[in-house]
Amino acid sequence: MNCVGAFAGVFDPRRTESGERLRGRISKALEPDGPSQRFDDGCLSLAWTEGVVCNHPRGDEILCLLDGHIYNRSDLANKLRLPEETDTAALLASGYAALGMELLSLLRGDFVLLL
Image (cartoon, rainbow, N blue to C red; front, side, top):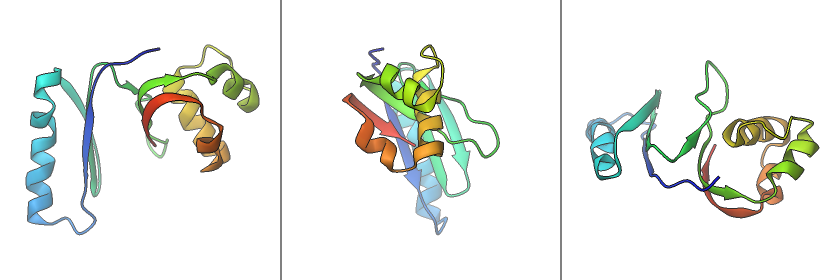
């Protein structure tokens, strides 16, 4: 998987007026890269364009945005006892749920990752 896309976000724990303005601008900032999808959860707002891999979480599932390539994804799937054909973003979200920060030291590749 070699993705071309973009993602941007705003984290505003105090929910300030300037944070609200920034939140409204993140989708607009990505317009040159194409249509974007958006995720809002309390003080965090994210948007991404096609080419960024996303696992589309529901409820309390972990959101994963990935742009790039994980070279050792089959090794990671084996370690997590998941099928090798598991979507990469879902694999990384599951890995983070199971291993926490240890997951990051196991990853090999060229990528940008948001969990």
